[in-house]
Length: 296
Image 1 (tube, rainbow, N blue to C red):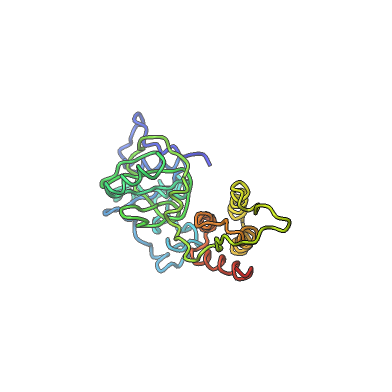
Image 2 (image 1 turned 60 degrees about the vertical axis):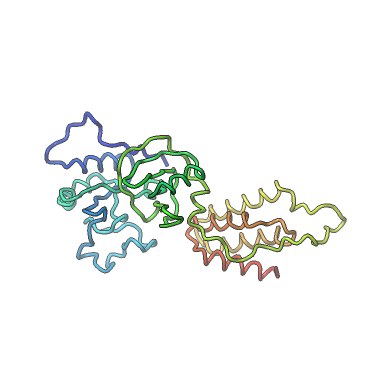
């Protein structure tokens, strides 16, 4: 996906009195591939319409499977965000823009992730931990923008929210700096550490038949195996549950008895699975079931 330019209204573009300034900003962002929506007072989306009250259209924001709402009105927060400029300027949306107080965008819909830092302590942590990227100043802190979408989560650590899929962020400015790829350090923020223990790292494992060092202890061999497992999960387009379980089973079959797996390897597999929509509980269950089947 082409990286959105996140431009604002061109300085030399004439501004008709009939079109609100916020709508110009929204149209420019939409033209750059960034889904946008208006916000009312208090930085919150406009309320549900009668047609969609109670989730009648199946597009309530917390229902991942529902996808964007099909109602033409501005009624479902992030799911109402659009890149269609005809919709933005339609008669249904025009009154909303006249009342709007800010523009928001759906980062995940643009292939972006926003790390929202709300305190000086959070900013200091980010500077020490995360790779440099584009930074947008906010009222209380900074937004760090990365190229790549992921699961959203609030309060991943003190003063830090992650806004991407199924979430919106307020548009403030283009920011400064060059946007970089979404790092694993950010993905890991929303992944719960597995509560189960990985395979035993005992030092009393018998030597292979014929003698010699266990080949699984070769760092390159293990790294290649974990990388292949991550790729197998990431490439799954259907039957994700089954793919995750079979992949965990394969990893444990190859590496579960020689003591080379570490917590870091397990977390990498869990990150790959949760990026495909698996919950932390499903990951833990799949890992436990694979260990049980192998007698580990």
